Length: 225
Image 1 (cartoon, rainbow, N blue to C red):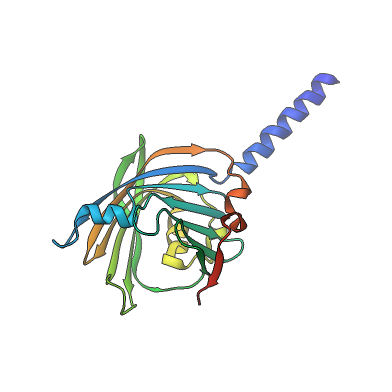
Image 2: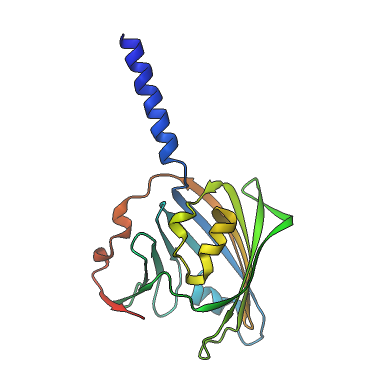
């Protein structure tokens, strides 16, 4: 009887662990390189303003991206709360947090499709890609179009349903096509620079909820429409 009970416990534990690990949870560490497209924007300035490392902390319905920007605002953090339909933009040296809806569409979609005949090896795995191109309709922005090639690893699955309202950057469409996290992003931000961001470390692990607690920042929240 004791052996039978132990087998039931072990079987149940394996089942629930498999269920909880259906979608990726953990840390993704990226390194970013920049290629200026115009002479008066040096690579050093791009590193300063956008950072050359980024860490993503991923839960099923939330993720956080922290970059090591060294400009006037310090480190920058984006917190994506799909379960609350909100994005929080936090700047280390600012006393405010900007909050806006995650389903807000700011860019016009030009193209999205899987690439069938091109892959990259990232961390030893073969990774296919999705093309995602958008047009910026903000007349005050220095960028006109974003031409992106996003490589993903199918074994690090994302919940497509959880991302349905993540319309910012049309990221819901990428997740719908890939069903997984991106591990290498090659993007031309016309007409200023190209960035290549590639994962160099992926750590499947439990990400604590406290990481997404906005109250810990002790800053004023400003809502953007």
